[in-house]
Length: 197
Length: 366
Image 1 (tube, rainbow over the protein chains, first blue to last red):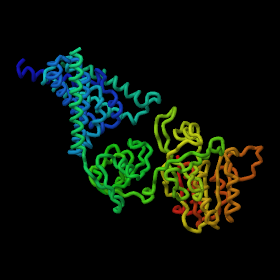
Image 2: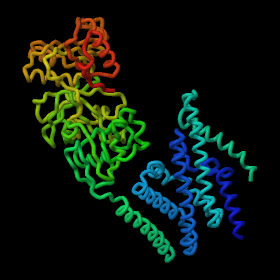
Image 3: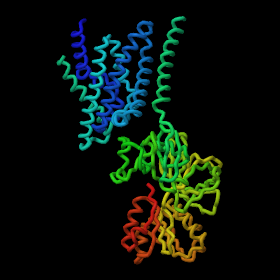
């Protein structure tokens, strides 16, 4: 495949990861922080950016580790363990660096990092990229797109929940109950993007 | 076989390499070196930077009240930081009012010591210590109130002002895996050296009271820290009104000991409100104080006296009894201990009788 073709595929995969194949709303990965941090738009934007950053970097790192360490050694089945430790190390490392050298960025983004170390959406994106056999560039687009998609979903959710705080929700549905129903409705809404690509 | 060993080796090597990266990073990046914590522009502590202000102070044996153990969920560990703490964090915002933010108050469990920090804490907090005790006696006062007597072991003496409280450490026990601190006023005499007594009412499903009532036995070790609080008798000759309900007896009892110890001749009236005769306790002790203090009067008030109990004392709410018995009281000081609802109602009644608001002192426990 030539360069332009791959670049074009990267854009398509990126777009698809944001809308039609939104990792949160089609595979329901990363639900825990999605429900916990979606009460305020401000916090959800911070968490969203953290996810975009971590997901982009870790899918790329994991792609490199998979392609240049596991495949040559015939150890593909180790990918789960390897991906998890790479993600955990990376997040820890970034947190330390931010805290030390960029307190402003740490304050807006860094405090969310521990929340997403064990986020299954991050691991999920790395595993999907292997299953689907993406190339390096496409992986980059996929990781970035998945992060943006996740962020889009949580920010939309936070907006809805903020407005909903004015509404009278039946007692049994308050909190996570109504949030899950909304997540389901949002997932249905996102199916509408299917025809776009 | 060879392949298995090889794969285990590879994955271990990768894991070890990544762990090394983190260890090195921690050594060089999160090493903030020696930092100074300057307290009240007076005392300087040299500490290893990198952990939270609360942890750092605890290591230095300075105990800031904290109920959640540094998870940023109770909001008790507020400390005034004059400089060196960096900007306010989103995790602190929910616990600080506008005035507190303007005054430089911070949650000490969220602020990290990364450079020299200047803080201001009340002098009393500097005398706060952790005490290892042994529970030596548990006595039923009513069906839901017990008196606990602790012997102080390490340190074996506590200097406190009558009216102050201590925090009791509750370890995890069957049915509760949380470790919490809960505050209880000291009820015993300051001359009872080496011991302290607390009066505790059972709170249904309360973590600490359930532990104290159902799990703690005489002879068990207990960990407390303190003393805390500004609730104390003022050094004047003004006539006193004490008002308490239920386990609010504790600090008032302690203050009465203080008056008796000093042979005080201050005029004092103690309105003690409970629901029914079976909620009433310490009547003998109060009679003893009436005998020792020439101008002290104990007025128990029953909200619901039984028809056939032959109760001849005051009835109704403690505020109603107060309203009936009090004339103009401009010169009085009032000391209150009880639920927030009872305190608010009582303050209104007292002010109605002319008691100056700055002469009303209380401990609100919720």
